[in-house]
Picture 1 (cartoon, rainbow, N blue to C red):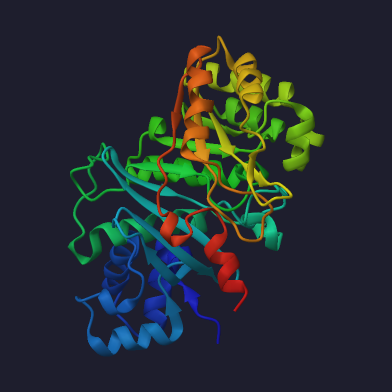
Picture 2: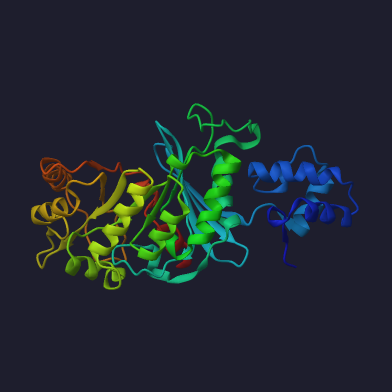
Length: 365
């Protein structure tokens, strides 16, 4: 028997559900309070009798996601969740504990259709879009991890001294702007119900130009990130098929327009890739000094921040990680050319933190 997902019920529907079980109406409020905290199951609902918790677990589940597996990095700063949806599809979300707060990387689709040649997310193809509730439940899963049954009132500003989720990055599995309206609905809910500031929300896209203009029309001052990864069309088309539809200049024009309208700095994501030559030596692929100069030409004079990302090895992909010296040389050229640049700190490399790796590994079993 398929279980009822109580998180998906309205207040009145939940009341009807409990009364049909022969329970008093007040049980609905108790259950809803726990679910809104992100309770993963009924066992944690200590103000419900044991027999009721057991009875509920037989016919219902709390959230539209269930934890299949969790991995914690050695430094305890990163937790990765493999989550299963009601239809058996699996997604990932990542909780990152930082000096500025607690950030959650959210998936927007089960799988991905973009076909980027360096990414694990797309290897199993796109299964479907996620709903607003399925994205929101990822935040609650992380929130529960941070707070557990010692749940306190949510701080209105996401104070990092409290155990809040304070930042959201929609950079997990999937292309958010192929699911724009559900992503917008999810972010509206996170802002209104969890008080997460628009300025602490980032949406990343590989360059779906109509979706970028949808974000502009939406008008919320969120951060936009563009997964660029190459500064010339020929190279970008080789590793990112979307570039065959939306060329670099078209993507960047839309991105500059969107970010300028929100008065926000545009983020440029650039994964630094190497290749193995015939001798088995690593050579630079998109990380040469020439490409650093070409990237500078594209971005100079705009309000941008380039996040340089050392590639997190994916066994199924034909790329190689480059040396730290090569990463810093690329950064130095951008800085010399007047482009704001930082190297993204590697988080969770020991637990396969790159998007889609845990899901891919689990599907092989």
